[in-house]
Amino acid sequence: MPPARFTTPAVTDRSRRRQYRRHRRWLPVLLAWVFVVEIAVAAAVPLDARNGRIRPAQLVAPAHSRPTAGRAPLIVGDRQVRLIGPGGPTADRLLARIASEMRTAIEKVEAFWGVDWSRDISVLVAGSDDEFRAAAGGGPPSQWADIAAVTVADRIDPAHRVVAGQRMVFAPGAATMSDSALRIVLTHELFHYASRADTALDAPQWLAEGTADFVARPDTPVPAEARSQPVSLPSDIDLNTPGPQRSVAYDRAWWFARFVAGTFGAPKLRAYYLAVCGVAHVEPFTAARDVLDIDSVGLLGRWQQWMVGGA
Image 1: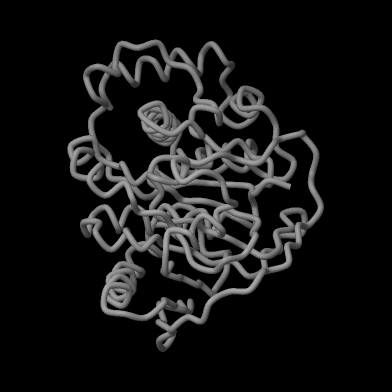
Image 2: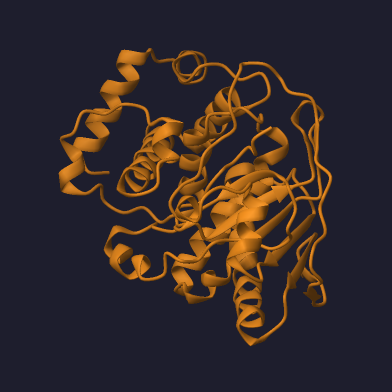
């Protein structure tokens, strides 16, 4: 079965995209395992096929992994964060930076999602790009050339809210990211980590990614060139196509999540996420009627107005 993926755009600020392009060689992740994968990426990644059925728990046997260097667990409130890397000054500095941002990331995720999620958080830094591709499910290097981090798990059973062996894995190249970019990627990934137990394996990736960006990214005005374009819901195909199309799709998913939260309230966005991405999920427009009390025409019309207003 192909890995289920949820991703984190590393291109999170249009004003910095040129800077980020210099570092697109960061591929995430450690542990040469074949995983059920939930990805937080730098520009996008595909999702597992959707068939409308609740899937049973997925159990994937790990292959051999390389030794890693660990440090004392970080305690943040009632959560314990394990930080693991391949050793060396670059990886150690990246882990230290992640540790310094962890409290803020946890607070942002808890403010939106609540506190009912894993008390144990694992973060790993990959030793090489090849280790990332193995963890992310394989594929050509070009598919992962704009990825900053992924979240993987050994076993996922959303029907019973069971997730085993979950961990966030950062690409070696993430060490070159600015503090603000790293903060966004970490928070985005942590939202996926927190929501994984409540997210179906065949959930629409675009809403999972847009909601993660809503939690992680600071609000910025909608670019002038995007305000007058007709709106339509993003597709997972767009998010899974490397290049500019992927970046635009991430932005559209983010803008939609911001629109829902800004128009109906953040709790409604959370409820909408659970309706569309949860185990018993329904189609986005059905969820709009059930959760937001608006039909498809009204939803797209109000989103268009929101976009024109520039947020």
